[in-house]
Structure formats: C-alpha cells, structure tokens
Length: 398
Image (tube, rainbow, N blue to C red; front, side, top):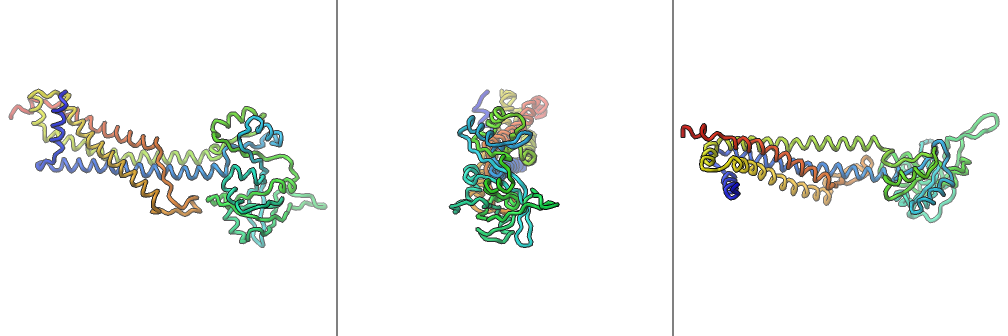
C-alpha cells in the first residue's frame, strides 16, 4: 500500500469543497457531537464518582470498616482479647447498643445509643474525635449527640437532660421505665441528617451501670484492608458470632448507585453514537460525490485496499480529533468545578456543600475506548463501500 498516495488524498479530501458544502458541515457536526459526548461523559462520571466516594466516606466512618456483633454467642472481653492476640495492629472499639428517649422539657427524641470507650472510639472515628477536640475530662454519665439533635434540644454544652431507656425495672407490684440524668458535653457533625438526629454516644462505663450489662453488643474494628481481613476475622472467631463489613450493611444503596452510574454511562454514550452516524452519512455523501474520482484512481492503479484505507482514516481523523478535543474540554470542565464554587449543594441533604468531582482512571479509559470503537465501526462501512466501487460501471459513459 502506497502510504504517500493515501496521505495525499486524505489531505485533499479534508479541504473545504465549495461544490459540496453540506458534506463538510456534516463533518463539523460529527466532530462537535463526539467532542460534546466525550466531555459530557467525563464530567458526568466525575460527578457520579465524587458523590459515590463522598457517601462511601460518610457511611464507612459511621458504620465502621468491620463490625463483630453478638448473634447466637455473646461478645465479651474474651472475644476482644482473642482478636487482639491474632490481629494486634488493628484498632478496636467495643460498644453496647441500646435505644433510648431523650427528654428535655416537653420534647421527646428517640435515639440509638452507643456506649463506647471515648478514647478508643476517637481512634477509629474521626467525626467523633472532632467532637471531643476541646473536651479534657469525660465523666461516667457524659453523652455526645448529633448536631441536628443538639439543635433540636435547644441546650448548651454541659447541660443535663433526662434519658429514658427501653429497659424497664420492677417497682412494687408494677414496672417502671429506667430514667437517668446525663450531661451533654458535645455534639458530632457527620453531615448526614439520619445520623446527626438519631445517634448518640455515651461513656460505656456509665451505660454498663445503667443496664447492668457486663458483655458487649459488638466490637467496631478498623483495618486498612477490610475486604481481605473480614475473612481472616471470621476464621478465628467461634461460630455464633456475626461479622459484617460496612459495604454489606449498605449493599442495596451501593447497588442502586452502581446501576444508576451504568445507566448514565450508556445514555450519554448515545450522544457519541448519534455523532458517529454523521460520520457515516458524511463519508457516504463524499463517496457518492467522488465516485468518478475513486473509479479513476482505481483504473490508474490504486488498489481496493488503498481506497478502503483513505476513507477509514478519514473517518478516524474526524473521530479521534473529536475525542482529543472532548477530552481536553472534559478535563477543563472538571478543573473548573473543582476550583470554583459554581454549584452549591445543601449540606444537610448531601452531606457536602461543594460539588465533589473525581474521575477514576477506569472510567476515563472506558470513555475513550468506547468512543474510539464507535468511531472505528462508523468508519468501516463507508470505507468498505468505497472499495467496492465498480470501475467499468462508473466510467462507462465518461
């Protein structure tokens, strides 16, 4: 194949032809369509990834990487010592879980109460650690509540409230709910309303006294690689003790996000597919207009392979140039969204006030590969069509 000949013809065909302006308008539309499709896909997938990572970050902290919990067998100090013996580098925060009602004046607020060792909990939960930043001393019956609940209670730090526990105590011939005055020393801000309004933490020593419970509801574990370590933990624990990872606790939520991401990718990829149809129509129109010229080149010695290469490369040039321009525009759009506060989000709804954008290498590769394959397939048919031009039929009456 004569590469110089193919290159010369491609350069000639890329020039504007006054006789057939619609062909070049169609080329420009195809280029703009691919550019828009690639840029839109990059920005959209970047936003989806950013939001996914933000939600994952919030849920990972409040749900913890791995949780060991009582199922058929109780979790106690022996369980904790067993875990520390086999995995000394992991961080552990044993907890007692119960439900309670906070009474302040005439208002009642239900919460999920965790009794934790404040020091150990702060080591694996940076949101809780931030809440204890200015706290120097923690008493037995001290409580940390969520920011939203703290605001609803209308109290100041250090004030006492009444906490009504779900456990009941015998009183004469009847029963009475268990009440205790506790001190609210601070509040945490997770950025998620469900947590900030419905979760509270109490000193585990105080909760043990109130509930008369010497065993744990479970143990929160921090590990750098929970996906692998969860199987190791399961092997050393006796049957009847449950082990669950943060991703399993929110499996349906992340499955829905993944499906939404795939659907968005496919829908936006249609923009590139539509743009590729313009490449097909443009090349076919050019083949029809240059039919005699193609037949003449073939009669003078040009091979069908060379004719096919001319139109295949012509389509690829338009498509690849559109992909490169779209990539540049997409990265610029991502940079603008990251640098400037163009889009503001309600923090109480999304857990973040600034639009998070993060395009992963895998998604970027899929976008570029998908766009290139679409352009390639769109260029093949016109190229094959051009190579099958009948020389005798075309030049018979010329």
